[in-house]
Length: 105
Image (cartoon, rainbow, N blue to C red; front, side, top):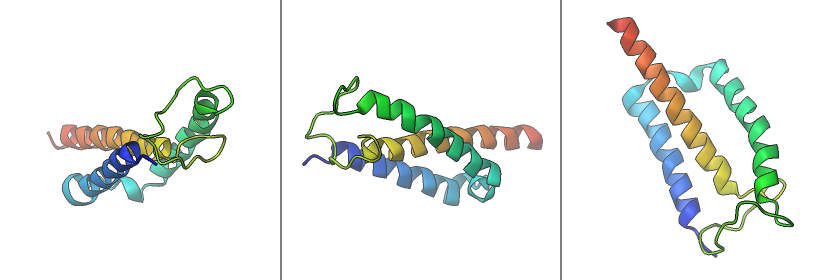
């Protein structure tokens, strides 16, 4: 059972969370709008990712050695959710940091 994608996805989540909590400190995690945004992302990610990764007719294939094999719901690799969280959160943190910098200038 592979774990390369799982390791990379978990690492991305940890780095993004630590970056927010100890470096950027944008307050993103305390805002209801952030969590609503993440719910919207998830609402679109599940059907699209589920369609792309369904095991009976996959469009996107993962090497067995690269993923953990844990798939929820509709055959979506759990790593996709972790990666998606890290990617969207990192973009929103940078956006917020840029906004704060413009306001200070």
